[in-house]
Length: 308
Image (cartoon, rainbow, N blue to C red; front, side, top):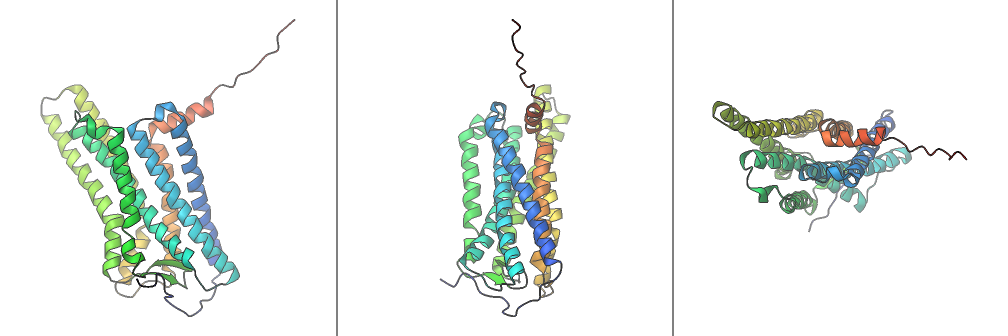
């Protein structure tokens, strides 16, 4: 097996004045995302009304966001430490941190795909309750995490996660290669294209329902589930849009024109996308908003002393 990490550029880079503020900004966004994700997970677990399949899938998205935010926080903490001490070296933990970034990013995107698949099954196969059940959805969740954990091993064990001295991170070497294209497909292309494909199929299906004699309850339910998938599309669109600089830098690397500090810049947008995602999940999840509202407005018991 090849060495898991090599130094891309052995020449020491000068510490730019914006390195430390950017590191702190990334860590701040990651910490905020982690705190919100933990709070939402606690609410989902403790609130009995949230113990449904749709809320379990939302909880999986919150957990994936929690893991993604934690991975970004750990990786950037290492970068900040090296920037402060002007250390230009790496260890095995740096490579593992880079690997976890890819795992958790994919897990987050596939968690949105699972929500879309669930809505698809509810609309097109409403009487096949087996596919809507907890065991099957848990199985899908486990499969998505296995895929997220396994797919980066193609470039992890071939030594293509390298230490970039300019960006002080261990990342997949950005260049025109099978591994980079493979990563783009696994992390972005497959989940995003499948979500969009499901969305357009369901739009056509609901339109056909409008032109045929359909029970009003069935039509209302289909429109409601389509609305939920539309929210998932908005979520994944936020991810793709905010992370556009990362995708642009990958494309530029195919022609050897990537910026010197490409990962430092891309990670800022990546962490902002994590924070935007967890906030949007809260805004779009009515049951979660209702639970938070109940906690905030819950009346406190006032004990008055007995009059003798």
